[in-house]
Image 1 (cartoon, protein in one colour):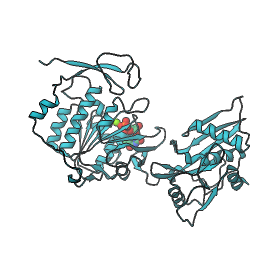
Image 2 (image 1 turned 180 degrees about the vertical axis):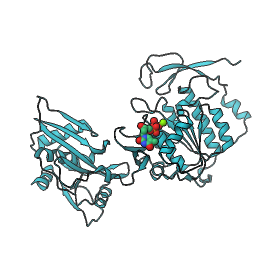
Image 3 (image 1 turned 90 degrees about the horizontal axis):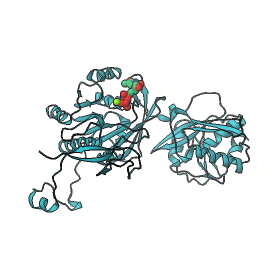
Image 4 (image 1 turned 120 degrees about the vertical axis):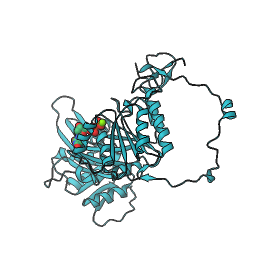
Length: 453
Ligand code: TYD
Ligand code: MG
């Protein structure tokens, strides 16, 4: 009988050790290293291999390789297709990560129910009846979706061999286990083995496979960084659970760009694709409210108009409070210091609260000017005229700096009916626009004069 061999693995990053250590030396996490049984491997060296094995692939000159026709499956979900770079690639492995309860299972089941071809949804977390109940909520349309509750990979492959599905969904990789490995489901060696088996299946049968992966407290994909290296595409489903909007991002994509993103709205009957996100992120009140300003930002490659709200009030305590939701608090402090120093506003005795509506987080510096405008508007209690938006960064000297992709931002603002956009004087504008007035400014004072002067 083969001697069982064990090794110690960090459950956070997958680093392997010969003996137990308290702190993982590669990811610096404490108490994450546990012992796992691994299969006894047969030692091979390149000499023994080079004499024996029949060659199944041989080196080719780069210009001799036939690129072939990359087959992409339309998933019937435009946002999902966009994030994937145009659809699922045959034989690809996609990993979908996200916090519990964010809607990963819903997204995949909904997609499977829309597909015109056979899909197999394997769940290790929910029973078939639970999945049926979920499917009832999102109105089933397809009868080609098979549901299987199973956690052993060997059994799953048996069912796949009989059913021959065109798409396999595994919910989730952490619940799978393989007979070839002795450790418990969810451990690093199990995840690695099960993923490797699925990759082999996907590449050999040209079937796309989608895996659901859990996420840890600090937001990285649970356990294995190794998973991210093994799969072709890593998607992240994120959002604030208290809000209805969800963002699907691609973190790694071997078949497309990683700057695309998809936006969904979680409704009572499943996820709705949001094709025009700007409309829902801007409140449609007719009377002007002080302290609100609209910024033309970019999320990945998509222009997005978002509303920023600020509340400035007298500080009750000695140290004024500053609080920001969806915006970097350090950046808010920096902008306040710039306002104090360069524009002479006495904000040191004021509490400042900032909020980006819709529960989204933005780190595009182009929203600086809108943040400043919202703060000034709340401070003066004067609303900003309707139809005005902003797209510029603010420098430490109080100068208004250019931002990238200004043309796309302007076009989006015009499309949504905005009548004026404030941009930096130094931004080169390529587009000619007739309906939207472009105000090019160099200093904060000029903006103040325009808005409240
Ligand atoms: P789920 O897909 O189970 O999340 P995950 O697989 O990422 O853990 O989503 C669960 C949440 O979504 C749950 O809190 C209920 C909500 N939901 C809706 O609001 N509408 C729906 O139609 C469905 C199916 C779920
Ligand atoms: Mg789930």
